[in-house]
Image 1 (cartoon, rainbow, N blue to C red):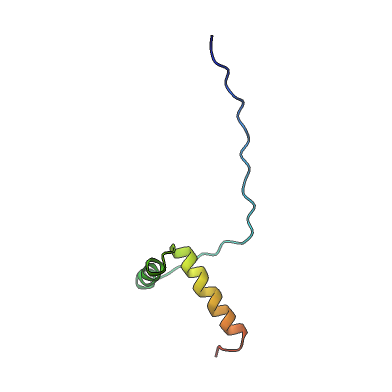
Image 2: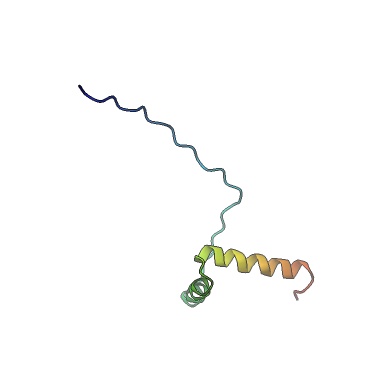
Length: 65
């Protein structure tokens, strides 16, 4: 006797908590980002996010120009 197939279940989309941002980097800057990411054990997106947010905090505290 043939085995009954399970009904397909509709996959749910994960809820996004942020908004995507695109960075266009020169080859040199991309290599610099990749080097820092490897040093920290992170991927390039996480490293860029960490650096940008740290820079923004510094600017907001009045440490910027």
